[in-house]
Structure formats: C-alpha cells, structure tokens
Image (spheres, rainbow, N blue to C red):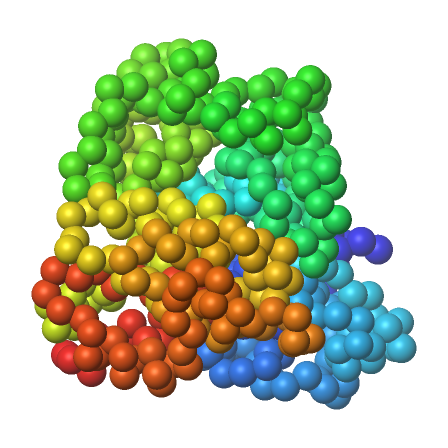
Length: 453
C-alpha cells in the first residue's frame, strides 16, 4: 500500500523530525483529518510546543521505542537510514515514506495544485500567492517554507486549491502533483546532492513535466538557466519577467522610492497597478510570478493588487527586528551568494548611512562550493562580519571555515558572543544592521533589540 492508502484509512502516523516547518505543517494537517499523529525531534522548539498544545505526543531525541503503535513513518529529508526510529521501522516491516510523498498524496486529492519552485524566492512567492488566494476569497490549503503573518507556515482549507512551496533538494518536489508549476530561477546549489548545474536543470524540467498534459508551466523569462532548462517542454508555458518585453506577464512603468517598487503588471487580460510594501527589485519578480500563477487559476486583478500592496513579507525575509543605538536591525534568510547580492542591493537603496552585515554561512558544502562568490558578495556592505558556519546536516571535515572566508573577503570572523559585544559598541544612528543566513544569526538581532527594550 502506498502512502495514500494509509492516509485515507486514517492509520496512525509517526513523523521523524516533526518540529521542522514542513513536517509540523504536515502533522497538523494529518491531525485535522482525524489521524493519530506522534513524532520526534532533536530539540524543544516553538513548533514542538504548538504541536503538543494540539495533543500531539512529541519525543525529544530519536529512539526505537518511540515508534510503538505506528502503522507507518514519515521522515524529514534530514533523517537518514541510520536514524534509530527508521532502522527500527525497517526491522519491523513498517513502511517509511518521505515527507514529500505525503504532500504529494495530499495534493492529489485537490482539484488544483500550485507548486512554486526555484533556487531563490520560493517562500516569498508562495506567500504572495497564498495572500492573493485569500484576498480572492479562496479557502486554500497552503504549505509555506516560512512564517506568513496571519497564516503561519501552513493553512488547512476546504477548497479545491492547494499552494505549496516546492524544494529541489534531494529531488523532493518530484513527489509532488502540480497542475500549475512555477520556476522562479535555476542556479547551482545543494551541491552535496546534485553533481552540478546540468543535473539541477534536469531536476527542474522533470518537476515541470509532472504537470498533466493540460497543466501549465510558469517560468521566469529573465532567467536564462530556466529558459534553457525548459526549452521545448510539451506543456502550456506562461512567461513572466521585468526585462523581457515579450513576456506574457511583465512589469512596466517601474518606479522606486527607498527600495520599494511600484509598477504595472501587464498581462493578456489587461493591466494591474501594484505598489509593493516590501523592498527589493527581486520582490518585483516574485510578485510577477505569484500574479501570473494566480491569474492562471482565475484570480482577479483587484485581488492581486490588494494582496500585493498589503503583503509585508514572510518571517526572516527582510524582517524588521527593532532598533539598537539608533540603528535599524533587520533579519534575512539569505544563504546563497545570489540571495545575498539581492539583499545587499536592496539595503543600499534604502537610504541608510552604513549597511553592516552579520552573516552565518549555511553548510560546509555550500560554503566550499561557492566560496569565491561568497567572498565577492560579502565585500558589498560597508562592513561584513562572519559567524561560524551552521553545519545543518553536515560534519566539519576542516576543508572550509568562516575564518578562511573572512581572510579572503576582508571581513572579520567572530563568535556569537564576540559579534554581539562588537556590535553593541559599533552601531550608531543611521546604520542598518542585517543579520543574515539560514541558521541562527537572528539570535544576535534579537539579543540586541530585546535587551534594549
């Protein structure tokens, strides 16, 4: 029996790594379907506390005895075969499914599935699409890879539409069932899994080919890797872009004030005037993608304009944390050189005297593979400080370090404690401090702003 059978029969489930953004959303959705859900994670967290408040039993630490009574396991991509719960399940003949398989089974139950993929911008574009759907009055189910104010990381609706952020790592999105597939951009990333850009291109093409013959693929006409990867695909293609005058959905009449853009969305059905509340030209691209996809799904222009104007960003995407010594403090999830470049360009357009970045590299493999690009982009702010690499799923083999990156980029490598102490003495009125990375750099922002308050 595949995972659809277990879900439809409401068989009891155990989720390995239940505290993650996607996993906790999945746990909540299964619980709301009347399924008994239990799980485990490596540490306590706000997500774990929220799951317990809903009545879900969560164990801290992984142990074979935790899975007693489970009919099947669902695991996060970070849980490997040597995990004691997964090993125990295999010994006992209990099936183990990937998280993405569960989401794919859920998508198959919906009439329409909008899946938004890309190396960068997935969370923002998905959040924008969900905001448009809600403004349009749709009772949408959603899975977002971050926190959208007023929604959270997920939403369980009763309508026919599901919107899901779709990640390429470990080819997870190849388990999905899109009827509308969006590709924002394609770049080298996750090189601990992919062999290089050719394999990444093929992964995205395979993702788009999951759409049914009457489905739609929505692609960024400004991104040459995306255009090349999807050339000749046997699906209806809708293009969007800022710099491509023949794109089906495009931005014209762009103006910018303190980093925030206003423009007209031109599409085959007319014109939609938009003023974004979130800064950055990259957010124009994300807005075009969300608008193009939601137009395909029948959203009207008024709903699109209102939703995009009132969208203030997902958590950890240029998120205002507070002030310290007159300096504004923002946090951002950027962890790839291209994301850092877009972030720093946005920051420079906001009118501050100095831009100071506190960056934590994410994974040794990414830092090593993109070392030169990181070194170049970290020279963009007026001052860059580098925290120890966040290891995530990896072990340190000594081949790369924050100290090495700092030496090449002309930055300073500091511990969390050293960085906080330094910034307390350095920040002044008119500064912008960015804490940056997919790890825990935000802790410094919260320490600075929380203690001042």
